[in-house]
Length: 570
Image 1 (cartoon, one colour):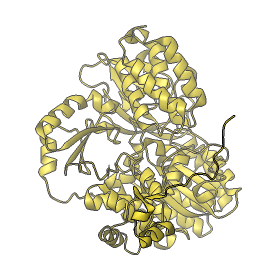
Image 2: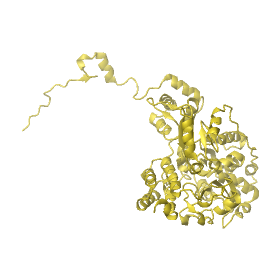
Image 3: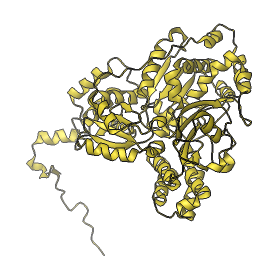
Image 4: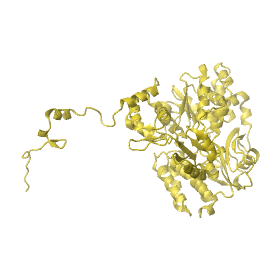
């Protein structure tokens, strides 16, 4: 039997590595009382003063966190630990809340204390498909050799696929970039000016306010016109209004101007050329569902569009809804094109898609019913009210209804935004609207709906580019981004480029997308693809991912194996 010695020993109390008797009594009492300051990094008074000056009288609520992170970076060139601690203190947020947001977005340069500050000059070279086809990899190498003191890195699509390749120098974009043009852009210290488009007249919205249009009449016109969401899903706009208006007030309208789909640049075109029409559409839609606020979420790669919208919003005056029109700046996250992730970002959080239900029409921005519309969808609304539903509905080809803006890039002679009848085919779009194939190249294949829309061979180019027409072939038209490929383009390399984009842009919230895209990219880099494993990965991503990024990511690889097996070693 063992012997218990309870109470027969004396515990030696040690404080700071010494016997208690060796420490002054006052020190022992102070340590017993606890810390004199909180754990973690202490706020530097100088950093706090700098943050306070930068924020001025602006509200300190959570929804402005990303806006204030942009302000700090614009002022100091990066986000330092001392300024993030001061910002957390000023906004009454936990440090983790600030850091998790600051490190989530690609355009926010967060620097820890033990890290080297980024160079003064950062050159970002777009490595998305259209830019890669136009020589972006070679340009990247030449820029690294020419600017050893700069940080030269790759970046995903910048929404200028018709002017590939594209380089972002600081926050100025060099289109159809060459080494010399980048040199010129860097040395040019002149302030960049933007030619302002004509201001909107808001005639149709004024008619709504004056009673010449009722809410029911406007909804009926939009429904009879057959207007659908142009961001990718194609949901009927009038039905969306019904769902949102059925919810309790207050309600919100959020405008999704974060087009990050490689190959897509139509929304930038509409904002930069007709901001009045876009804003008038937003005012009409907000009025139709009695929304109190309008929030426009604009991707950070569009600084010119931001300036144009800011000026146009300032002209609205009494036309603005009671809660105002607010412009929010994205921070480089493709996932925020997903509507619920966009709302999370507007609220000052990481752009993580929400689980559904509830849907954003029921529980959206700040927990209220929220109408979400794409820029192009809003652009057409004033024209439909002015010209009548029949004008829009009776336009189209091959069973399509209405007008659409197609972003055309790749191996065509005249890339750009093409306003064409809905339902047009890729062949018609190339030959009638895009000047045919570039040079003496031969049409080989095309992406009908950007990175996530799949890849089809040229002999399938007579399928209408419309909702519901391409799905039986494993593709979809999405936002209308058409990337044209020619003989000599490696379909396996094209699909790999797209999968790497998805792997980079995955928010990481769900395992099927986070791991699936990464593993798929590794397997697709092999000379011969493993069909069985890739099909298994594709099925898991498509069936189990939370949002459309992971669900659509397998489309290019599946199309490559189905329509171009010889090019992927099958």
